[in-house]
Image (cartoon, rainbow over all chains, first blue to last red; front, side, top):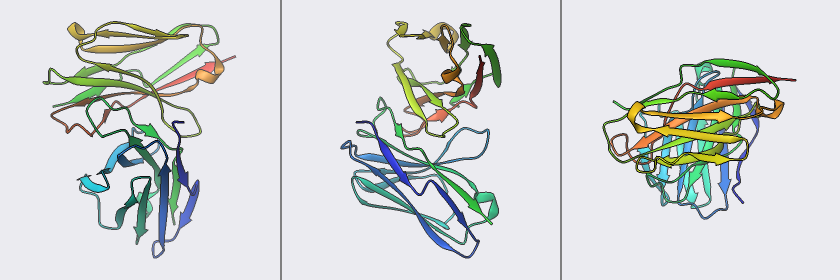
Length: 114
Length: 116
């Protein structure tokens, strides 16, 4: 089973709202990732968690706050977003986060900020 | 700097045609991995293949084949007898030690449209 699930599928939020995106995997993977993808662009890495610790933050604004409560779960907390933050947010996981590990992606959450 | 170039922005073919998607990469590392992902309209990126820098053997998987040539820094992807379900955006990606072993460098993607 190479499944990564993400909820919700779609999210519309105002600039003053607080919301969270959720990602789950049950493959025993120890590395999890958040990507942001704008239309007609490749995914851009935001955060990497390795063994439940934040290992990479690609200079993401603080209005995005990641959390890894356990090895299967990854959240992205959103607060005071801007319209330009509207995008597809993809979660991924990989076995160890090593050079050779392929990443498995979820279906994404399509976020619209109004 | 690490870079992946997919010069073909969009390709349109008719079903049953063969199509090749080009990928050219740049890296100074001798150890690196290359990947291909498919992104259908649903949005999920689907892993297709991984190739390491020491393995230049070409690979075939059903209608899919990959041609890795270090001499030209290319890792091209061919779909034989294309089908409508192959319509998607295809991304080539690179990972090496310089970018950090957890970071994928993606190309800009090639949109493939297969019409009946």
